[in-house]
Figure 1 (cartoon, protein in one colour):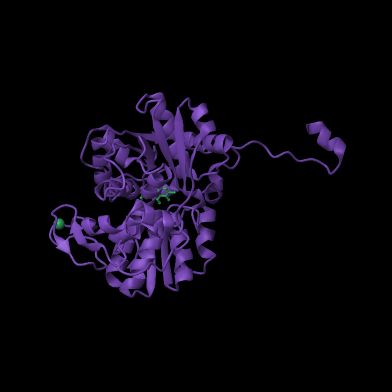
Figure 2 (tube, helix red, strand yellow):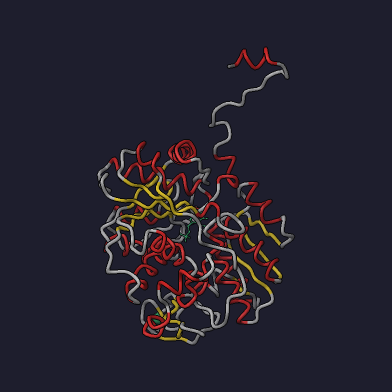
Length: 406
Ligand SMILES: Cc1ncc(COP(=O)(O)O)c(C=O)c1O
Ligand SMILES: [Zn+2]
């Protein structure tokens, strides 16, 4: 059933067979999956998609599996809804929330990429899966590795939030905390990946893994009634989610599921880790790696693999980039909770804060529709808001005590 033809170098265009490889042998450019869109156009109709189960595999022709998918069969198809209270508060006409804070099974958009990566790992015949993670990927690989029957090694920076650590350990995987930041973890994992024949989802399986992020965009289009939004704000660590949502929209245009669209892509980063936004604002092609220092640990990648491609998309779609300080991230988390009743993690706080800024700066017009990407759950980053919420009211177990505080 495969519609994925091969891998292709994003820089020099060389074609490779579908194997667990990720860089071009000639120019070291990243490899990407290419599809037979003519063939897909003939079979993937709206009617066929709508008739399928509400999970990310309803778009399977545009995902890089050669057989029926085996992992993540309940992931995806999260809610998209109009955030009326938030829109009113920010004095905007229409904000939509695409809410992956309730994704299955580990409450972040990473369940999408892991569903695809581990389905592919099965096809390749791997027995052990692994990843380098800023936290959410660790949770998702840990969980899916158990349900899919893999051995599992997960590598994280040692200073992650307690809940992200426990939410990996609970699955009984090998969780390795490295004294260093994510970029140190990633470097070491590159070395381990070349020595051990494991499926590192975001290293040697990265071309396949990254395709899973397209489904976040496919769902937005379907849930908006088969059209792309005017604006979308996406949080970036490596920049992969942003580039793949863009690729997904272009694919839907190419196979005729939607008309040609002109969505503006805006990127959100934390001010303590903003290599992509900084380069964008400087109008530079070069992304200068930095040492992250932010409470948005899920976005703390100082040397983003897809940064260059993300900037290209922001520029060509007339989007913008902004950053959020630690205080603004907390304010963003609280604003979303108090208006829409959604408790998002720090990455979501970054997105809400950046949305507010871009609207105030008139970079997004108040009368234009905006989709904000809520990609993770606040229960995993509680320390970010500890002591910064309203105070707990403690009383004695009698009515007088209660009435005193009323
Ligand atoms: C909640 C959340 N949102 C967004 C991102 C950004 O992902 P990307 O590396 O694709 O830019 C991450 C990455 O870990 C994340 O955990
Ligand atoms: Zn190349």
